[in-house]
Length: 76
Image (cartoon, rainbow, N blue to C red; front, side, top):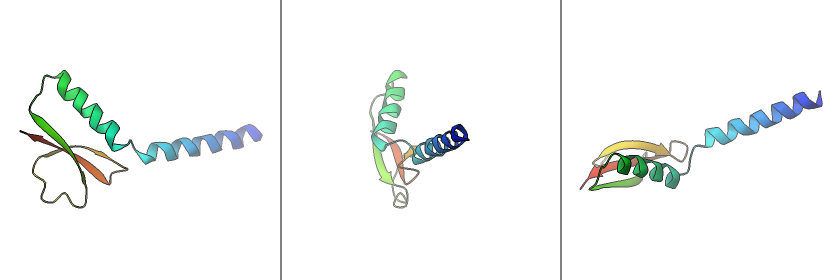
């Protein structure tokens, strides 16, 4: 019984950690690494609030902070 309670407790903690999402700086670095591996140059990435992204020109290439922020790609 104790093992079952321990397993349920650990699974609930793991689910909470996965739902939190990755930090924005980690996601931004992952995207930069992928772009540079493909040889892409002359771009900028900007982290913006998802709610305030109505006027941002560029393409949304990722999200972070549990979906509250977006990473926007723009060619220079």
